Image (cartoon, rainbow over all chains, first blue to last red; front, side, top):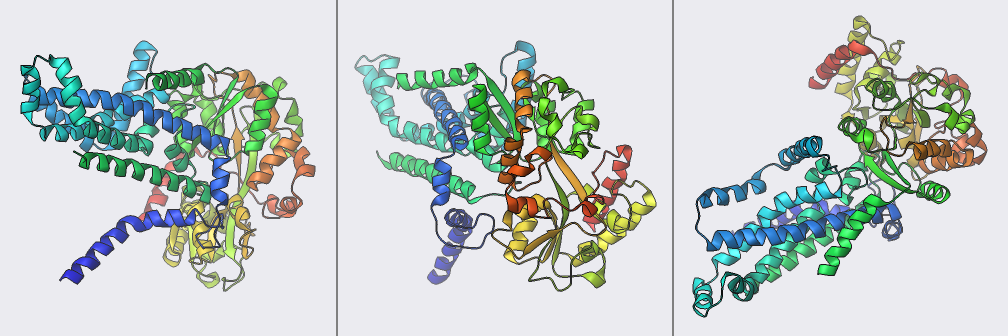
Length: 258
Length: 341
């Protein structure tokens, strides 16, 4: 029985990670076009790092990820704290609405954003598709993830601590600043890292909200599929995989810390 | 933290304010970095390249307001007139393109855009048959390898492109690949149904190429450029235009109607018509260049490769895929029926 379980686990892991392993292996392959192994090389990584075009796309990706994560983390944390601390009408509804961006299909969200931006652009002349609209698009889904992570951290908080702070004369803001925030800080960071890695490799929403000059790495990778994916792209994908894994691992480590 | 945010905002604003900008909407990895850098240096401009993965996506973006965002686009030949009719691209002012004269005569008045009114050609190629010369069981020189059971030469793939694939069947039958006679199309359909049974199925150009390289397929319906690229690594792979003829295609370069920087766009079009620049573009992609004056600067192997520059008797048998108007519905129906079988 135990053996069966082990085999099962192994198969599941293979199923999940084999395709990723293939990409990483191919990024070191000498062959430019085929899938056959023709010897080890790091030339594709060198080529990648010397490509100014891809550096620009990486810059776009990072600007979007950092800015959207900052916005989503601040707003998401405040949202979670508000839901935790206060009672108000419509709280149940708000809590439910929080899950919608998490479960709604990306493609629906992307099209909705595209139409919304077009509509606002007609009316105001602003919201030209650009890095700015991508950032807004990313915030819409990141916000929910951050709020959910921070909320779970808040749930394990002892309410007596905030009450004690209030007893000792701390106002609402002081309590938040000196008691609540330090306690939930690991949750906030974990939420931010999750949001960061979601933004880093988002394709669908980016695709619909991107304008000229705002090509990101995932968009570029998709664009190269039809013209033949070169090992340079495999190398790029490997780096993206490593970056998002690092984000998730760091986030988990922070969540574990009390 | 504050400083980081301020810097990021500055970077965002800075990119929006940069002057002398050329926004190019192109296939991924279709223009050598060297050429872009040369243009940037000469015109003191920044070139921003966005990429599309399918012409449909490019058209959709332009129609959704992108015609006011991009300065230069690279549509396939069969989209040029459609885009011009839809008012997405402008009529070119030939007085601003002094290098037009560098084009080969047949590209000065191409079928898909008479007199280069709306576009200039970028690169061209053909659609034909690629095969692994060590794996085929019979000689390959005709579309029969797909359509005649007697000529079956090994596991095969047809292109997953409606006009190309129905066109190949029409060519095999001796008709034009723009034929709209329902009876002829029924004949083509019967051939395709049979071919589908014998072959491994339909595939995109790159997928078919990978299957050929991996040894899963021996014969595939393919674009010349895709195959020539791999010949250095896989010399056993050959490409030819079947004796019945095949498709010729051209990627064109056009300027959107409301391009924000039209002067720079004209400068770019003229720039890529320069002999040495055109040659660099062709050498990089291993495609044929329409710029006759570029021939002396081409890699000798490229120039001598008949898969890239087919000999005159083959070129006579090549046809462009043309807009066939409402008859496209007939094609759609036949294609659906073939694929559903």
